[in-house]
Image 1 (cartoon, one colour):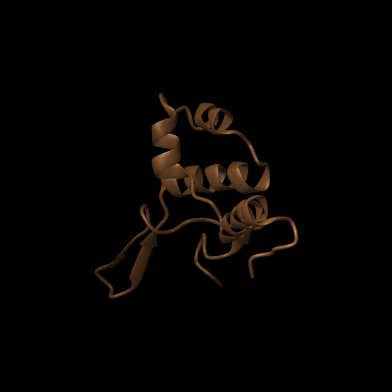
Image 2 (image 1 turned 135 degrees about the horizontal axis):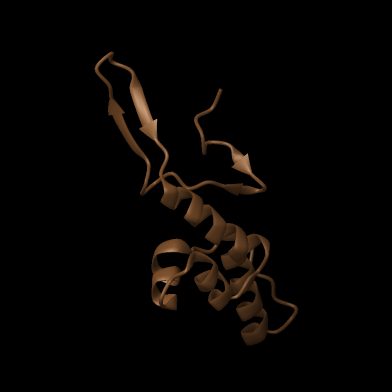
Length: 101
């Protein structure tokens, strides 16, 4: 059985980088902790990518005082979103017949 957070949740991976800590307990087993901020990051990613919520809505949902915290620590764009944005800009600059591959 995969560890909590290693599976796909509603099309979004629960991030395990910052709040995930691994250690070896006294019996020699590897123990992985799952933190509260992993859930907050997953909520932010889901609202950003899945629901296309605006930054203010995500900021209010996570109860951040300012959008800087929301944008710098809790949100990141998916590769698909970045490629789509690049395609939009390439079409605007080079014309609609050009598609970035």
